[in-house]
Image (tube, rainbow, N blue to C red; front, side):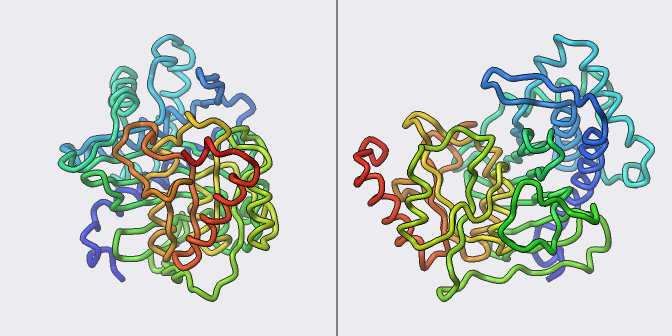
Length: 362
């Protein structure tokens, strides 16, 4: 299928060009000794690449789609308070100013340091909306910053929500191989360094292509089938948000190997499931008031859904992306091929009941 047939040719072209440049920025920082890391209030790390890539994405998409709204993970408070950090982010952005892709218009750079901060802040305070909210782009500049800092797998996420519904998702895995087989680990980086893009358009399926190279190398991803074996995708390290003693028992009840694919970045979990590396994930947060963040999931979930996956929360409710920057209308995730979803959801409920953890089912 050609891009023009989707009705989103400009959106996809913009995403592909911006993600190629964003990947270059991220790889430059990986190779440097000092990654300009600061710690946010929730104790998660953020690097100069996070800031630079968010600025690049917003500047590029705002130039292409000036009437749209933009949501991103970061704000510019740390940059405005630290001139040295601000200069490093600005200098990083400008390393691609004379790159061939940039010169051909594949991306648009901010005009000044102040403009860069304003763009980051514009997305860092915005939120998705519901019906009537129009087109909202959601960006995660580096998903998996902890693994990124270790030179392991990470992703860059671009999602388009229209009136509260996922419409398009484009994910770059700068160091993920298109030929990767499961189970997948955080350390399984592409030995050839080529990377890949996985993307989906609502109602048009999901596709994969090299991050760099000709668009003729596009592959449509196959649909999940009722006869497929289930294979787990989860996270057992570097993340402490999961309820202990549940996920491995759910896998055991379903007769599945645990952990299966073990990945920190949520965006990569969704992409790997679309690629068929795994096809089932469960996530029960350790606190009932803990919620997912919209940039870790918006657009990326569509990749799996367009291959025949079904995604709900732990209570079986549809995922609501209109609740805000935190997905407070939902608690956790249960995802599996559509025909198997009820069985996986029942296993989660049975385990929680058997363990006396009834508060997580309310």
